[in-house]
View 1 (cartoon, one colour):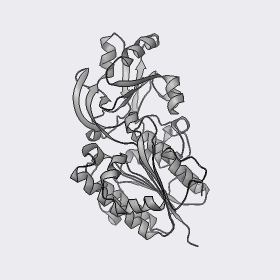
View 2: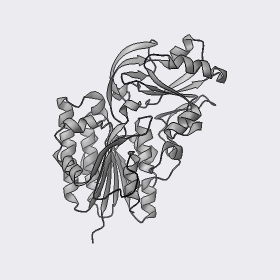
View 3: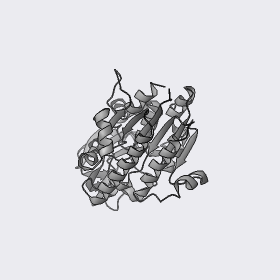
View 4: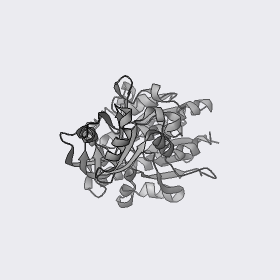
Length: 366
């Protein structure tokens, strides 16, 4: 009997709306032949938090990744949350190795690779591929185009064809979703090509176990708020950290629907909360321990306050306190819905509600 191959696909920014309006015959066939539903991502709905959740099968309370960007209130230092030292739970690659399986990570973003590749026998990012992959797949097409995602799918197919590789985790980038809505022609072409490439992989392996999901959805935003300015105008000193912040500024301009607020005077907590709760565009304000319990976060890695925006609003550093913006972004509850698919296996009695449950189900079979 041929050993099954396992492919876990995380399509960055794949709001269910893209599936509803796109020509994706291969994916629809897999959905019809498997278990498919709309599920939930982890809040805050950003890339690092959710990639870490799917790669570990754990909530942030277990794996420790609570943001794209980390602020240390003791030292005052800020750093991108993309080093493996931040990750506190075993990866699916480590669990595959314990089960006697060989695994690979293929991603568009170098930050996903450096954060999550612990235990992988092969790890490659399209942003900076090595000579082996340039020879086999071609040079990196750059991060700000549809072709980078096609490169990732071709690299995953290349690895799955290698007899010694049993498990591949594939993660794309969401430049196209940040740039184009579901009905736009460029988006339609992108989704059609991803579907064709996924169909090619499925046709290679009669015994493929496939899990597919997303890290977050995507929405158009029109209203921006600089929360640090809001607080400063009331005499409250604070560090406002937009959770979406990362190196890919072209994607989202570091404007997203969730924010941690670190107060420089702890005694100002009640005043700051009341002020922010009254700010138009702010939908939810939670104190640290309440937020940790409600969203499965690590309390010692988040701010004094955790804010979520309404559907049209984003938080970030702006020239003024409030500005009109035009950006497609994520981070809030309004980008929580994600597609979930299992093909070639069944969740049985296991929970199948969150995107991380896709990998939980597959890892349970190793």
